[in-house]
Length: 77
Image (cartoon, rainbow, N blue to C red):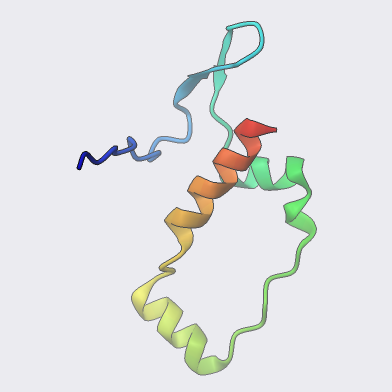
């Protein structure tokens, strides 16, 4: 069984190829993608004080997954 690993998208200014025209552009940041897709208008859920503390202490376990899926959705449109 082989495993395909993706390069982590740590640098938001990475250059990527566009499907149309073959030119390159600066990679968009997550806030820019959210704005273009209209996700910036979605209000996040309200966390309870204990959940907010837990999130602050442990970090967001879904952050990387969300960003990867958002980039994939944006690039596929």
